[in-house]
Image (cartoon, rainbow, N blue to C red):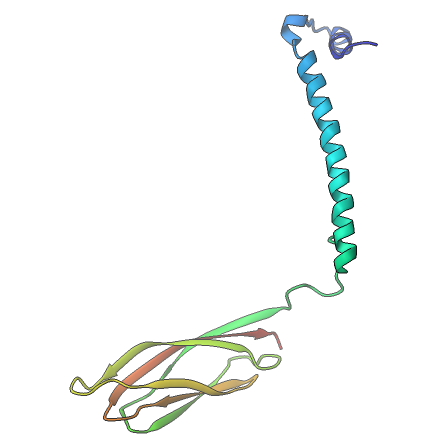
Length: 164
């Protein structure tokens, strides 16, 4: 049985390159690496069998099975701000917002107050909710109570949903 060195030495001599054992000196390391590769291949096969058995028990689909539809539906997002639009005292104000392009169904909307100006002599109390959300827009409800006088309140929002 020829060693790796002998095989490589023959190939090199055919190409006009000389190679001696001190330059090569890797026969044992190559043999060890080949052994490790063989062991790892066996472990990989064993783990693959275990994974298939677990999937069969749980009824999970094959990892590489093609899906008929993309995992994530095509979505888009739209952002904006809504202003209370003037002083509010012990009342509510509804503000209608229309999306630039409608969504396919009602989108998910996240929002938060980014500006809030109240009379300094009173406690600031305000509630902002979205009581109505449709594919075309939403209604923002600003509500103040007690003795709170709100001069201005602005919310920032982001709506994300399936493309229409």
